[in-house]
Length: 329
RNA sequence: UCCUCAUUGGGCCAA
Image (cartoon, rainbow, N blue to C red; front, side, top):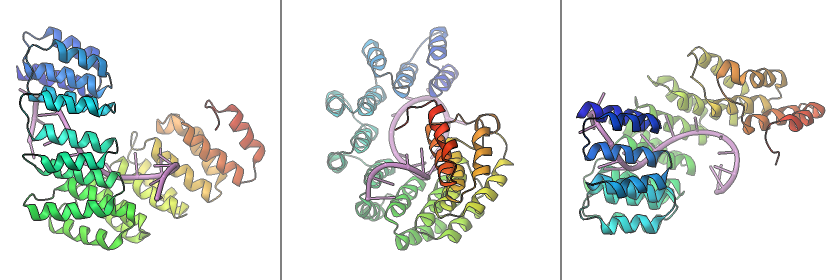
């Protein structure tokens, strides 16, 4: 029953486990996919123990069930257990190995990941991407770029995910030359309309200090989401261009509710802080919840305190420290 | 490329 499973997946994805359970119980029958969906729901919600319980109680398991358990173990840093699941499962597929690579990578074990990657029977673009991104995330950008070239030569075509990751490596390394090269390849493949690739490019140019190029990419993007907007705001905020930040933010506000998130507001407040715009900062700060739907977090308080301090309003800054609903550190 | 499983972009931290 495909529609039942689809409904189940919908709840599981959004973390509505109790509703998911309800649907599960109401279903006339379950197949392996139904069980896997429930299993994945627990794993995504971080309920590893419950996931293990479900896994044990499953009558039929398939490769996907085991793959989900590899991910579950990896998520809580239990790589021995992840390896054990991988070792004990009767059949493997490319997802099993790639999940293991990702598990090692996200726990910082790049060499172990590479070992699994090298030994894999079969690789697809996701496997390559997982390993390339492993280098990117662990700031081994030289290796990331090298593996990117190896991927190209291996006959597996880099996709949008590959480019996003390797462009990000250039951002971290502030490697403008490689970044530009990748940008031209992105244009050749017509990937520039992708929101994630585009945002990675905006960030790359910004981190390399090329504000106008960052802005140009931003302006050309047909689709922008909250991450895209925040990226361009951060580029301006970090280079001290508060006016651009506030102008762009006015445009962003026209996008309507839900267009900003907590990080966006940190960037806006940060821009005010660095330009001594105490009044603007105060206005944004007090409106966080009501106008922007953002719960004031400790980062917002820090920005506001910083703004007040720099503006010479030490009394107000101190008052805010004393009244903030967080432990000062 | 949508019934379940793996990879990608933004502030702070890190660099």
